[in-house]
Length: 345
Image (tube, rainbow, N blue to C red; front, side):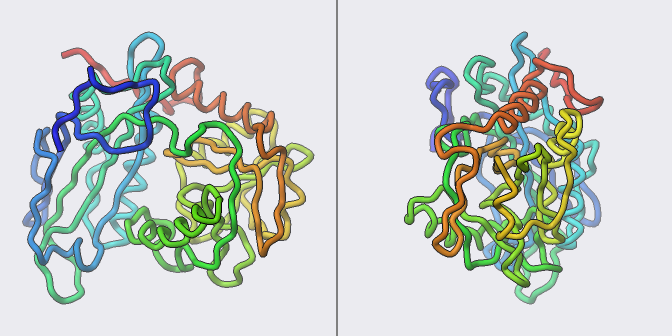
């Protein structure tokens, strides 16, 4: 794949896909310590055929975005939460977490190096940032490695769900996303590999994605595809599922704060699939999805429609507008949520 050129990209019609940009960041861990990281132009990673990541899945990753402000500056949104979550995910898989302060500086460095590829403010796009940590030790037996690579690549993206802020249809799945006591709260590749089959089955049936129910009873809502679920009750309360196997979404925790600010009295609580009638509006929320309205959920051939199958609900729209206004620097948010990326050369 040849390197992307900013002049060749139509930033007003971006999809959610990979482009090989000029720079990425890499640091390596050997002999019990992290070595200094640096930018590199090589988009390939060289591994032993016995690398532990290839056979036993010792790998974690993150996702965050850089946003072009109206004044031309660049914002990161709560990168400290991504740094912390990546460290926690790494600990679950017996990997050395990349130092949180170094994580944030590395993100800034790679964003600055690829600043020509940050979509302009008017486009509504963003620069997606993918940090990942993999085990590289050649291992045959099942045990943790001793050598690791931390890397960050970036790519300009548009909406995760085609159509942007438009309601889509979801369907419950008989498959489980993750087990209670498993790796559901860690951002590991295995959770996403397991979601590919049910996701494809949903797409072939005409749905946007699946609703995963809890693995014990298949009764309580866990996640929507690769995003967290929220519902807004008929009396205006913001609710999102509570479960030990749900990924702790930065977007979710941000919306919980914003919903409180907007008088929606938010709560994390178990939500049964038979309790959908309480919700006037519903949506999916995550770094990639931001907020995607849910028009309907089909469970056991019964379809439940929320606010509309064609129009976004007013409270969902208000949350989306408030969140994105903070991310793009149009409105002031809670202290510490937005981090400026200095672009001076």
